[in-house]
Image 1 (cartoon, helix red, strand yellow):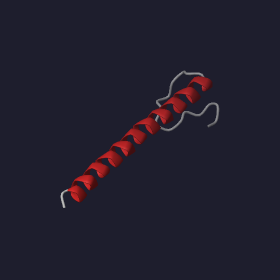
Image 2 (image 1 turned 90 degrees about the vertical axis):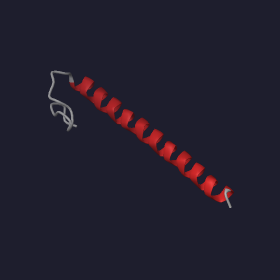
Image 3 (image 1 turned 45 degrees about the horizontal axis):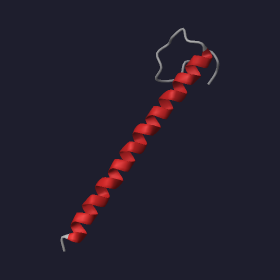
Image 4 (image 1 turned 60 degrees about the vertical axis):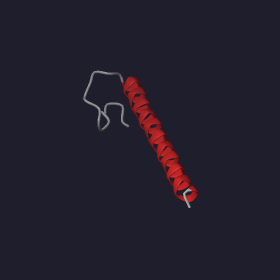
Length: 57
């Protein structure tokens, strides 16, 4: 990211470049946390579904 460039998805602001980088880093981290929770929830759901199917036979 160029020093004067505003990243895609951020509204133009008067933030310093260091603060923009920190906001982008925090936003990417938040997305990763939410995605990992979603993947974990899917694996738990799949495990419970497979356990239910296999134990009912």
